[in-house]
Amino acid sequence: MAGIAVAHVLKQSGFNDFTILEKGSDVGGVWHWNRYPGLRCDVPSYGYQFAFAPKPDWKHVWATGDEIQRYHRDLIEALALKSHLRLDCEVTEAVLTDNRWRVSTASGEDIEADFVIAATGILHHPFIPDLPGLESFTGPVVHTARWTDIDARGKRVAVIGAGSTGVQVFSALQPETAHITHFVRTPQWVMWMPMRLRQPRIVGRLLRRLPRQDTTVRLAQFVGSDYLVDLVIRPTWRRRAAQRYGWMCLRALVWDKDLRAKLTPDYEPFCKRQVLSGDYYRRISKPNASFVSEPIAEITPSGLRTTDGVHHDLDAIVLATGFAAHNYMRPMTLRGRDGLSIDDAWAKGPRAWGMTAIPGFPNLFMVLGPNSPTGSMSLQHVAELTARYITRWLQRFRDGEVTTVEVTEEATDRFADDVAEAMVPTVWNTGCNSWYFADDNHIDLWPFDRKRLTRMLSQPKDDDYILTP
View 1 (cartoon, rainbow, N blue to C red):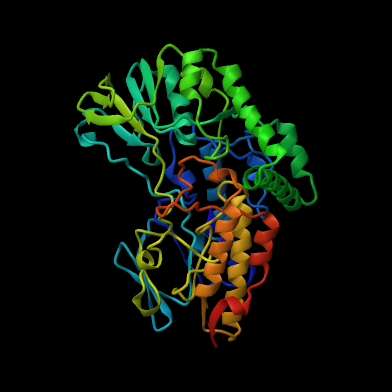
View 2 (view 1 turned 90 degrees about the vertical axis):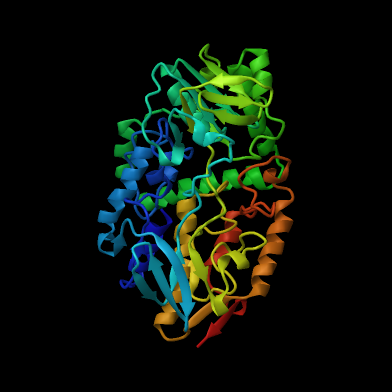
């Protein structure tokens, strides 16, 4: 998704000598890799698109994964990007030598570049939990991010993982299984939304007639983003009201008191990525469904055993265990100035000025890098805004003003200090363990409002950079 935004902005700005290297067999990022049953976006469709490429006729208010994937695939043709795109082209290494980048691919090819833009996203490296005996299980084991069809009809199925993916795939598989068990470490707050609601055709026709659909999309994105930001970055009455709704959903939809107690989290709603569902609480309450929060001790050839000694007989295991969200472009080998590796640069956790520039790596930028607002803002808007910021540097390079651009350590440290201070009153810092936390235990999110984002990425400031003329 981010790569499409960058490519479009480059073409708009008169740059045509660029190549998009995509490791997958198709575009779409997370919507290419994820194909599990029940896959659906938790952001309303009209806001989950590029303002420069509006689609008024979404089939559902919350689009399915297939429809979002088709939207991105169609953009490659509509935006004339096909000639720049190389699929099945995984980058294994990028090394800076004499102020030029040498980019190496898995096929053994080397590509020379003046600039590298890492628009790799965050949700594409599946996280496989270290479960003793996992390889001994005799039935199918499938990760939701590398889905292969399994026949769940009349089978005993385990779903491991309680995020949006776990809730979606559990709800999709439950009706056809003999028995399905949801294994989680900690329960999630699940807020009811009519996720299968179809968008009336007349809505699409009316939207198509609007004279400036791009403006309408941006307005939808800004309103949605500003509302979410207000919920998560400061404790207001809006946050309390939304959290109250989460408690009401659990109370109203789960009548069994024992099950409700198991499903009640010990942290505030929105502390983790909020889960939305129209049917999970109903599905988990069915006679053929179980909810188990005891830790998994081991996987056996015929099932799994929890730490309370109970053995659960199984025919299939679904790993809805998410991603290694803080790898970013890694495991690619990345070496910048004086041979500095990205692993050494990020030894204390991923960091970048304004999500996009890394000290020690001249002429390299990221889109949706560390501290991206994955829990509060439209990522399509953020990707486009970041691409326009990067393009301003490329224009100065094209005009002969600069040959290398590298953000300073001082600017990056100031940004990191501002992030740490602003993170204190956020809902993400209220006492839960989530994938928002990086390895060094800092919260890898954007704790500011949209205005701060726009100010930072509107115009480059030379004082924050080391520039070589």
